[in-house]
Length: 199
Image (cartoon, rainbow, N blue to C red; front, side, top):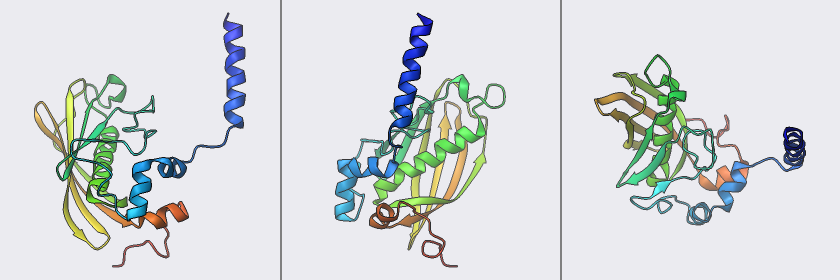
């Protein structure tokens, strides 16, 4: 039986390796909401209030189709994005605490979930975190992100992470807005000649 299973798996591996590589850009273009945003030039109508933000189904942090995902679920709440997750033991860093890098990923992803609410695509330019307390495991956590100021293409954002005992992380971030049509045309959001931020 095991030999038969191994043979089947080998056949599947061969078939998978012969398949075209996955393209996140192609998947985005196939998303009707993103296609509508591309046509209108804004992402402001992509996510309705209360709806979940799941533009990248294979995200390692919040992707609903990624079995390795941390499991963060992001939804829109008025003008903020709210990410919720219960960290399993596999995301442990120091004994009994959530790994700091996993916490940072949840913060960054929640801020990323804010972008369609703000009606723009952008990339992380700077992310600063202050860990106020240990991040607990096995209990519901809430990450919340909001816009502080928009200065041209610069988006100044803030976020926090809260558990049963209060805030355990606070963050500030600088994101750089990217033209949606240009992003899809070049498949490269950052070009040193044209996408850098002037001093």
